[in-house]
Length: 146
Image 1 (cartoon, rainbow, N blue to C red):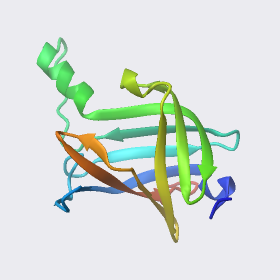
Image 2 (image 1 turned 90 degrees about the vertical axis):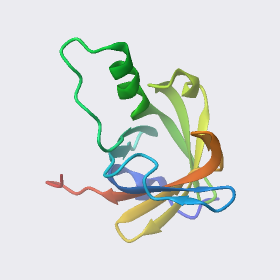
Image 3 (image 1 turned 90 degrees about the horizontal axis):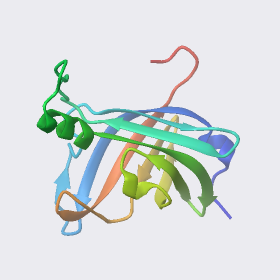
Image 4 (image 1 turned 45 degrees about the vertical axis):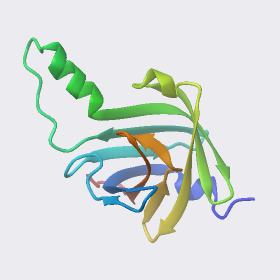
């Protein structure tokens, strides 16, 4: 049993903010840099896509150096797959991902609705050397929104 329906999730959502909290309570308002961008789409057929670009990414040169390519890889997240609902949670069943280790994994997110926004929170996960939860606030896009 869920506290929401798939119909409430279906649509495209734009990233509003991201923050993190470590297991010892230390808060970071910029885990993805300042002004990250992202889109999250849930489709009626049970599929989903998610993309997040860190804020402050630098353009690549025409022939980028290995370090530049590594930085570009490190500052962009993207995956797609199916989704199912659990009690106050959405589970992303990753089929394809920029990060190969995510393919075949289930990413669980708690869901909270706030008007025309949703807040997704990850379980505590090792990120950048510490255990932390990420909170992502997404705004529902309507026709003509950018």
